[in-house]
Length: 128
Image (tube, rainbow, N blue to C red):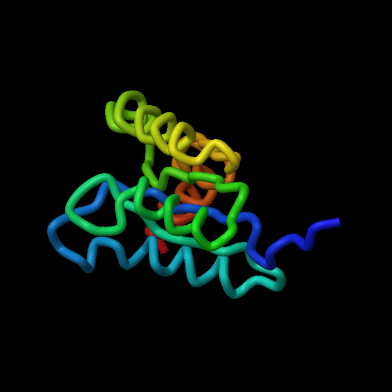
């Protein structure tokens, strides 16, 4: 039986990107929280534009390191044009480039019930 690499699975937090590098701060904090958990998967950031790495670059690096399952998590509030058009094309291209790696795409983080609940709670606490 082949040994499974310690980080055979990875999460890629995917964001739009911005010219101001501080924009990525919240994504870096999400990554740090994920990595702080016991038995954390490998976690990388990737961006559509302005900040590197791009999604294809991040996935190629993960595959080269032995990762065989990648969950791409869009850190967007909602499913807009980039997530409906650009991201599926990037995912499909990465799947073709790395057929031995299972690449899955999650819904926009902001559409998950637990994220909506957290934002609602935050908004409610803004009155205090």
